[in-house]
Image 1: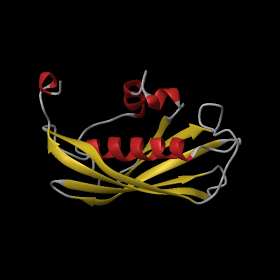
Image 2: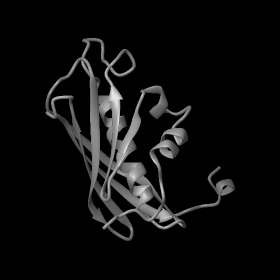
Image 3: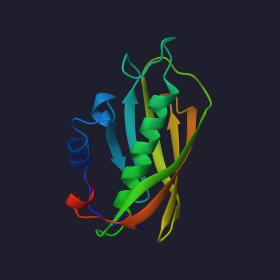
Length: 146
């Protein structure tokens, strides 16, 4: 059974990411499952730190992107999810190729969500494990956000 309350396509999610940090880092959504969202990110000059390995901050951007988008796909139209807290344990370094993150729900509550995001290298080895907590709030009209 699907956890999603909003229809989404990979093409739509990737188009929505144009001209954002998601686009800047080369993050691309690759799979939508019944209870997970997946995206990949290249390891290149945009995502490496000066010593040539994947920057931990880039991993956190991938994790928060996946968890936040998944969270917003799993709520009603009149709600929006916003990040409260994210943590990341960087377990293995990687210096080339592509990493893939997978967001899976831990808890879908009425006012709070928790997502587990695991990022693996091309050998399916876990390189980063993150947990993201989101608040579910009422959506404000666009002019009230300013």
